[in-house]
Amino acid sequence: AKAQVVVVGGGYGGATAAKYLRMWSDYRLQVVLVEPNDAFVSCPVSNLVLGGYKTMADITTPYDNLRKRHGVTLVKDRAERIDPAKKTVTLASGATIAYDKLVLSPGIDLMFDGIQGLKAAHDEGRILQAWKAGPETAALRRQLEAMPDGGVYALTIPEAPYRCPPGPYERACQVASYFKAAKPRSKVLVLDANQDVTSKGPLFKKVWAEQFAGIVEYRPQHNAVAVDAKSGVIKFDVQDEVKADVLNVLPPMRAGLIAVQTGLANANARWCNVDYLTFQSTAAKDIHVLGDSIQIAPGMPKSGHMANSHAKVAAAAILAELAGWPVNPAPMLTNTCYSFVDGKNVIHVASVHEYVAAEKTFKTVAGSGGVSTGPSEMEGVYGWNWAQNIWADMLA
Ligand code: FAD
Image (tube, rainbow, N blue to C red; front, side):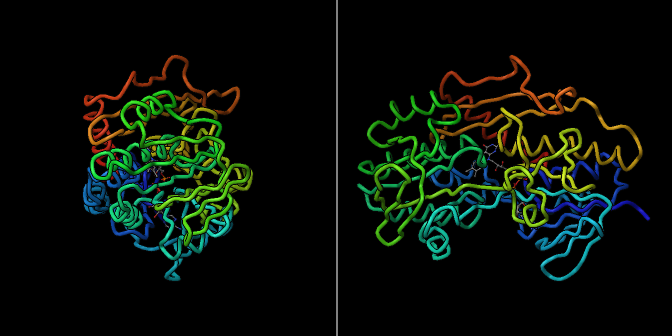
């Protein structure tokens, strides 16, 4: 029988893996993609929906081409259970699919239990995260629109590592840009559990001081422990409590739930250790974990660009293993994260990571990194084109 690869999760990691497994096998390998959503909605650029500069339609791409052009079998369902011994995936519908190789890229699970009151407030739709792009992104935008001028938007950030290091700071800029134009007496409070801004710090701080003076206030070492949606209060372990009108509370994060439930989150019970040559889980044979779910080496961000890069290394390794060829002994990963500080101006950080066999890990290539000198409209063009290009790479 023909080998079959099942991919769970059609996001940055999974969609890329599904397409490249088909292309690089000359369309011989059977690839099944399990994803519950109708279409792909991008987290990158989703902060611009909060700023009012883009719509949900602008960040949504259908899965059709994976099926029509690339012959991926799409299964619109959720993986409920994985049996690594029998090599099967059981779906919410009850159906079971067998795999020779499984690719798991389920993104993140938000650890609501870490903040008292948050789960209930989230389920009632009062305190949103919008850290998985989709209906919550649109709902958070509506909360910002409904907030009166002079109100306060509070964004809490968990301790690193979390999905997308610069994402919260970009979001602060987007909301501030909207407030500056539409309700200038309003405030953006950034309450960060970390010691300092964890990505592009000097650049973000300069933008807040110069472009959003009097609007953005940054407070480090604010570790949220409880919320009260009715009174709009956020409590911290050490610092004084804060009251706000729109609360955007990001709890700590871990690997996607299905990876945790399968017993793959063997790094601090949060992230999945993988063999970086193949992205195979160190806890289960023939299961390759990609994207935000993995335990990262120093300097590797949890980003869409990285997940796309993981997917290509894993796809090549899977095809080599199925064919009985040696796997590439020297994979490389690349990353660029663009952050929109308003509707047009962007800053970026970039890096290249090489596999170092002696230490079995990825290391940042010396001198490969780059960071903007300041926001520019030119980078705004690059940033938007980056999104168009990576969506095409995954889904066209
Ligand atoms: P995802 O892309 O989230 O894909 C996971 C998929 O798995 C989802 O489609 C989900 O429905 C599916 N899934 C989950 N569980 C199951 C299951 N049991 N069965 C079937 N399917 C399942 N990255 C950048 O590179 N650049 C940026 O500018 C950038 N900006 C960001 C801004 C924001 C506001 C946020 C929140 C993130 C940003 N990121 C950015 C980070 C990026 O979104 C993530 O790193 C990336 O999505 C990780 O890819 P993934 O494949 O691990 O997860």
